[in-house]
Length: 590
Image 1 (cartoon, helix red, strand yellow):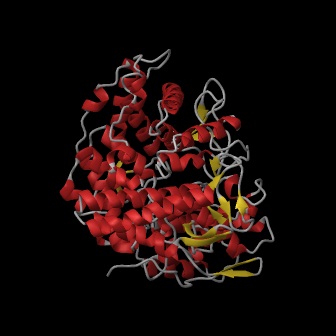
Image 2: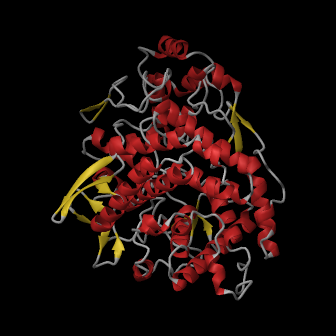
Image 3: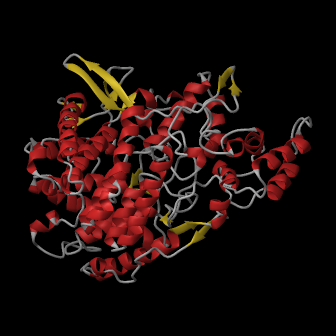
């Protein structure tokens, strides 16, 4: 039976500060173990007893017995006993659950080669050796689902997928949604085309089963998604392989994925110059996130705010991929003022714009369906215009998030505001746009740091704020400038790529690891910090970004000193990086 995305009904209600919240992350409509992994007395007791430093650890642990037996054993042992003894509870967990990660097996990605041809073209010897090292890391991050998950899905929070996959790393031991775009970019740089194809088939399986792609591959993610990057992944794969028959099989799931956003994530915005239908993140869940149960309870207990609304905004922020940042805070200071549902984000609407443009192209040249292509073309043109009318602020010279409560732009600098450049969601004949965005970043001193661009200029202790820089966001900025029509901006793209590559290289040489985020301040960069958990090693999208940049700029980038070549045109080298401005017919630019 195909399970469609619906608003989950109450399985258990949670009361805090007088508020009763009942929309859980999963229930009987989409899994048969929700009372273990998405709510219930065991989840609550384990977190109240603080058995694990990381809330995610428990909900990743497979069951040894079926859910009903486990719940009955818990009730027999602890019901009516008042405060639960943590020692006895730990024994109960040990007796009834396997360690987190037990259901996953390590693997070698399909198509792995120790010396891929693209990486061997990197001119700088040190960077080439580093790239080959990162190429080997794919095998350390490769996982496949054990047979027991297929035979007994009720025993696992992991959602079965048909093929092996690349994990981000560390505590992130399952597939994630938007991480996969940059992982796929890295696999394509490593010429692991079959591994990339299997990743796409896994995401297709989510759409076929649930009608959308969840945040990650666990049942406790079934009430939220992440930035819509499935269609861009398909496009990148097509550009790298020209495999028409394979991509054609993905088009129905691509449309279904977009339909989820059209149906569940649109919002109407009324402005003096017109009414616009745009997109926002908006999870229905209004209880603590199972993988962050302790943290969400602590946040609720620190405020008199209505808990259901607070928790729904926390879950919605997790859907944005930027959890957490002052970008979503009403007072730009405190997590308890979070109001993500009131924010209409520039980057989400840019991704949707890109999705529409790509579908226009794919249905024209892969699906051979001019009717659908024309439909998506009209939607793309309309959405591109709407994005400029609603988000571009002439005073600031930049695209800015729009706040529904304030009925105004948020003028604060965030690096993600460069997304329309990355997705080409602006009129390409407007060659000044890239320069305007560059000037906006420069006014906020975003380019003054040794190792890259920080996510914001606000030091809030949140992981998506200063001083942390993130690989994929720096990649979006680099690509946005590189794909512009401005030679000056193309050179700025190379300059930022050089900063990012050299900073990551220094950290790798010092620690022998790649990380999910980096502190970009200081001459000696460090792994990033802040947020709900310790910085994670691995790391999927960081590796993918570096490999992609090294392939793009491999003939001129170096560990130190100047370019490897004096050819200025090198900054505009294309390596299948989604250069839609050139690859998609010019009629889309009308």
